[in-house]
Image 1: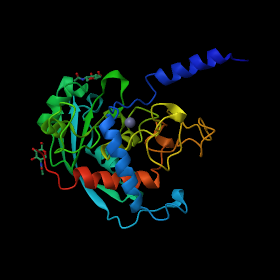
Image 2 (image 1 turned 90 degrees about the horizontal axis):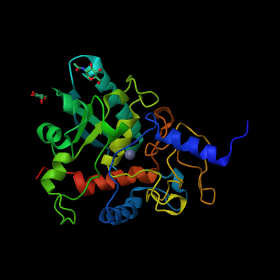
Image 3 (image 1 turned 60 degrees about the horizontal axis):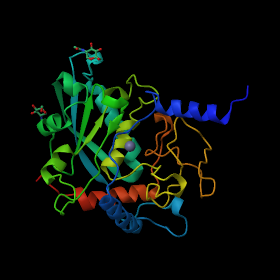
Image 4 (image 1 turned 90 degrees about the vertical axis):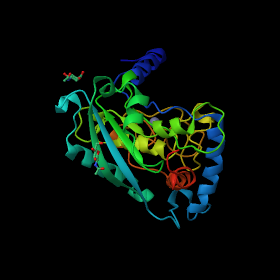
Length: 297
Ligand SMILES: *[C@@H]1O[C@H](CO)[C@@H](O)[C@H](O)[C@H]1NC(C)=O
Ligand SMILES: *[C@@H]1O[C@H](CO)[C@@H](O)[C@H](O)[C@H]1NC(C)=O
Ligand SMILES: [Zn+2]
């Protein structure tokens, strides 16, 4: 059977709008954040070996491992597994996935505590400010992970980029609100052994934690001619990758195949397996700049 181009395009659009396609709700960067990102990404290159000789094979140099304290908050609508009341073993599995995925980036995670709240609206991922201002623990250097039963708009998760809590801001958000809203929110059925296949190996937490460290999506606005993810060793791609389209090359005029195995793309959990060297270096730079030794306001 021969499909028309229009029919194929319509089918592709339907595939990307289905409930089962990865969707991340992390808000885009402001122009200020883009400027800071580029400055920091250039500085981060000094944390890599052999940048000029062989970027892709560069490794982190003079970077100490950072251990991130983690506070987990379960938001359920009852005390059964189907109510989102996660078993502790599943949370430990999720932390193990984070530790495995970030180990080559010299970042590790140390679970401090788990809180359980039963609240119908919070379990539906509603009232973000209310649940975070009540539950957030630790400093700006500590990672709070919120696991509601589900999220609106078929989102799998969302996060907030790190920003300076002291610099003057053009948007009206106060440092206190930035601090309270900080953290990662993901649907509880995306945890390892959750029911949201093919997004149930815990990679949504990895992806959102990548945002928490400041990384953007591998597919930037503007497609092949756009700014990409502003990371020099991530190949450009025209749009998010879904599934695991090995060999995809959506920007054939630019170097490299699409970064479909990158944690910051939209591929299936089983397809995601890496950060680039500069993404790893950038996460350290952003953490040192924005989060390290920063308490709440
Ligand atoms: C919680 O929500 C889920 C999904 O809507 C539903 O299946 C379950 O019965 C609810 N549990 C309670 C205790 O209301
Ligand atoms: C863990 O969190 C719970 C609920 O917020 C709290 O009651 C408990 O004291 C905390 N435990 C530790 C060791 O921080
Ligand atoms: Zn994302």
